[in-house]
Image 1 (spheres, rainbow, N blue to C red):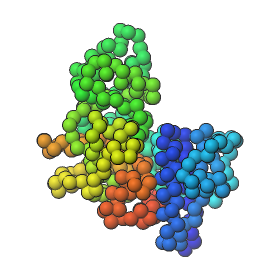
Image 2: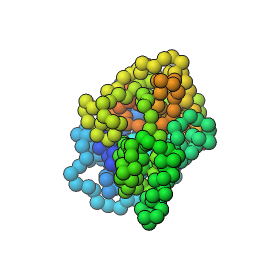
Image 3: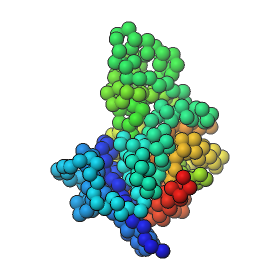
Image 4: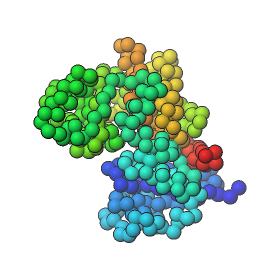
Length: 351
């Protein structure tokens, strides 16, 4: 069997650029394992923060050093490196906007080459929290109360904005969380417990995105489940995030020692099975493929579980929750990378 050339696409035009580099470096190491080296040849393609694609030695150096270059490459956004034409299957590991929102997936679809992960629809629904929640609601999946608004309702005349806040207080109440619909990594998310905080939170979120989501806040455990597959996905063991801060904000997420991961999560078997089934349902509802990490609230006092969101391209470093969950389930990192590539090729053949 001839080896497949894997185009590892990393970097990208988002605030999660550096995380993408670390994820790609871990995947590159996995592709060098004895089992994978017999199946695949690696072609790294780096996307600079200005959108220019670069391959060759420079892309390899960025992977090895796990750091972006000090200077960005010049060139046309559509002037792809020559190595692109030899790629048999793409592994895009671009987190955040312009990477996991369907834009790059559309480009790869036009290239008519298999790629790892969700297609345009699954990626777009997985990225836009408001569209995602509407899809979950249509499918009857359990969620906390939420409301969607647009930026122009926040940055409006003085008569409109107070009415918007009145509606949020009546429909959602306090505490509540205000989020930009299309950003990852907890960027722009704020917790509000009073009117003044709500007004500030709405203004901040509107500075990041034109679509906003306001969600009811509850006291609950935050549990995560990894999903793997296409039409018949599998669910992993559960993991739990614990922290001492008020909520899982950007600083808590990326500051060492501020959050703890427990794998497997100490959750009753009945609840575990319920969450795993809910994770697979969420994966299917948004038409995800390959991989996804589903975040769920478990309210211990009532026994209720609520779907929070799905991430269709989660962090993929060796310490990230997604690969750790599968390792605890019995699929080590290098095998997980192989399975994802195979799933990408299978989906392409059946499309």
